[in-house]
Image (cartoon, rainbow, N blue to C red):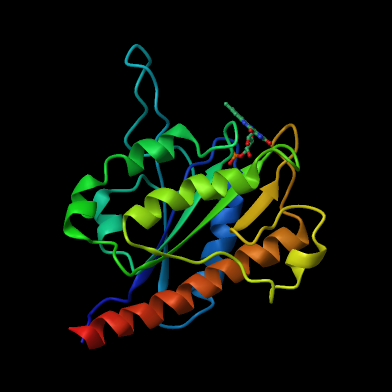
Length: 207
Ligand SMILES: Cc1cc2nc3c(=O)[nH]c(=O)nc-3n(C[C@H](O)[C@H](O)[C@H](O)COP(=O)(O)O)c2cc1C
């Protein structure tokens, strides 16, 4: 019998707040399920050694992730703004420090998903989501995108892809989530939570 609830780690980087809004909405989707919690964590910006370092606790938003947040999660949602069609360096930097978890197989058979924000509609959302999926597969995670049973996927004129939720934040990165984007990222969180609970049970039965 476990004494704490399993949790979905929502690990994101956000410079202007768009990806953070998505992360918070995904967390609401996770928390809409009973028996599982959402844990929001971010990563610090990276900089050349000649630049100043940031304080240990960010001024706003989630606190910085530790490796143990990832090690013990029941599921993972990875969120990043699109940078030249790819995930942002701070998130990649964190992932590149997860070799110990890979060696131990700590994330094997755990469900994962990804979400992203771009400035422009065709600015590389799908390529970014695929770039985020690759390290998750190396970790043995079970990737879950968004199914077309989420009918917003068919009709959206904003973000939303079968690879994961997305948001078009506009040139100033200040556009709020469209209703369809919001529904999709919420559904993604709910689905991930259900999958995480199912796979927790599966791993416990296999023991
Ligand atoms: C270095 C850099 C590269 C970027 N590359 C892209 C891009 O390829 N496509 C795009 O639409 N937006 C691009 N953007 C814009 C960001 O995706 C946008 O500001 C972001 O979605 C806002 O998310 P945030 O509020 O979570 O930081 C880029 C921004 C920066 C700083």
